[in-house]
Image 1: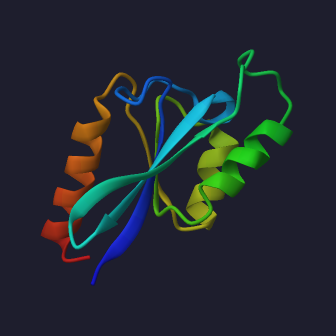
Image 2: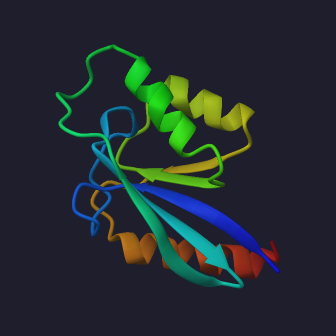
Length: 114
């Protein structure tokens, strides 16, 4: 049985439209046997964009700790390096439909036999 999680930075639950470090909301999807279901939504309240304060990024990193994939409109280079060390796959997909993104990851995993 194949199971994994995908975190999507989205303001409205429909489009990938948030920068990872300042995202106000993440939808977490659980994929099991190639079937996706939204597991939870986590909100961080109002954000004033990138402030240089990395404490907000730390809270977001904790949120996606058990996710194998992270999708955002943009992901800063420090966070990208962290994900690479943690062996997480990440994608910058600004404006993409969240359902489309989830579907493509599921298809990729099926084709690759993961």
